[in-house]
Length: 194
Image 1: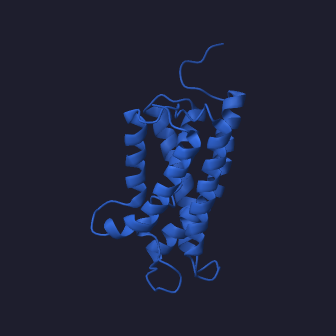
Image 2: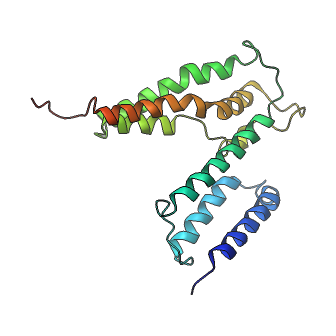
Image 3: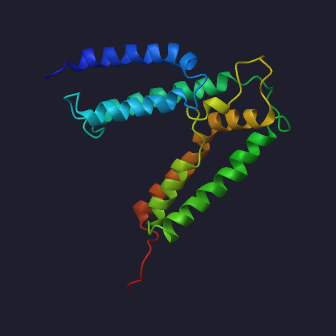
């Protein structure tokens, strides 16, 4: 059976709009978030073989890149719109500590475990650390602050929300450093050869 990709796209878009509208009410009493439900549905649909096109993102690399850019922009904008605290060094101290201290330490620890424990090259371990260290604004949405002026923004929730909205920009230098290490072949595990 062959499906028109445009019709599949429209059906998927409509299903996502319905999920965003109705799923939070239905999932309010369950220990599951909308993001986890969508990931599970995606795995189920694409592993069942119902769709006849190849879901490999490398086949449609430009479309995949643009769609992921849109998703990142929307999720970061959603995290940013929840914040209603005035910008100041003291008021945002938890955010700065998460970004400047915790995230680089997490990247370094993940890179060390990748090199020492899994045998990755330094470039691959750095890229793994830079990918895993930032807080995902979509998956962390259940513990973030609510809409502005609702009063449910304690310091932990504010720190997670603000860090999730800013950390992608702070992770990019580590991604670029991993690319630089890979391009230059600065170091790789294993015995040294002369």
